Length: 478
Image 1 (cartoon, rainbow, N blue to C red):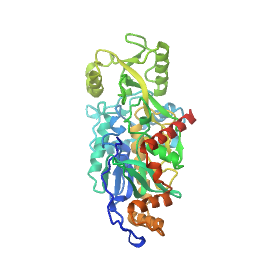
Image 2: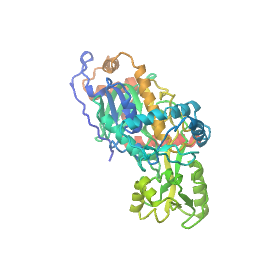
Image 3: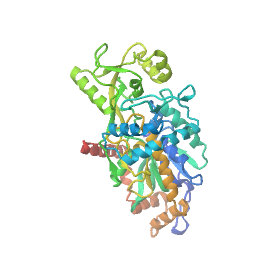
Image 4: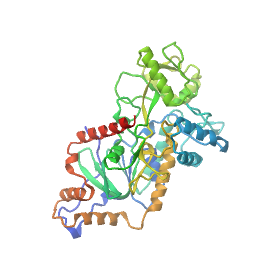
């Protein structure tokens, strides 16, 4: 069953003539944000209150990968930490990072953290001071955390604030299936709900914050509905993309033979002392604090050598009290699977985790198409290079989501979205004799945006084509 159910209906007069088109107010917004995770919410919180904002998500509001982030969020502890933070990020990314983007992220980190605390986000503390943990490829402890559910702690507070905003409309179970591109600018999106109804939504500006591509993989830590929709549309509509083959495989997810989303065993576990063994009671075979791609490669090599389907992670060096306080969610999940991490090692295996590539953007998250922005895992601003440093994802998403919102607000003209959208439709509609909205709307989409109804008559096939298009680009870069 297609899981896209919108919260709107097509309304208005059936008899429409050129001079008296009455548009449903529900299909015109100042800004559309595709995605309700950390990046989408942070962008919404930084848009001017006078702008009408529509936020859509393919599933429930809490079914974004931002809620799944376990380890933490990086922060520049002090001025003396800058050089090592910068070098750790660049080295993990194999120096293919954008230096300026890395600098912007790091120098914006303290302000971002203080803003999160202002929203009510609680980070672990030690005698009242912020507590820091360490993860792989970090030269020091600089990661703030909330138990092992940091993403949920941050995103739930951001979402709660967004839901209080009177200018924001939230639609769940709503899919973006295309964009409205006219000449060299974006004028909205095409959506679909669970009933299969398609609808153009007009806006002056669109922000893509729709997550990564884990849903196209058999084994991934991502939600399965995150299938790279924005990336597929960008490829189809000739919007610049970057580093599509840069896909991060996380070294340690809980091994199971059951299908479905893989449960992540946070890198913080290894940062706190957990060790990897080739088998139960076996031998160590890797430095656990190397960058993720290095550890993943060694695990896969070891599995091939031993002809096994997993390796083993032991937390025996971590005190029981620390496991229960820092990693309670991991402890409970493993217990459900029959493993007591305080007493025995657990089987782990690499799985797809994060997408470093994406829709190419500048330092203000602007894409190659005017009025279209991209943030979070959907975008590629160059911060992560060829391999993301642990716990940089939440920070990068927030910093550049805010920059997108601020750039969008600064670039707005005095023309209202309502008058602009009406002008677009009247211009496209002029000269036609259509009498039904369902007819003239498709004429509009075809004439102005080269969107044809036949392309969406079989959405399963459409999704399959999008998936194949992404895989083709990934293979090109391998």
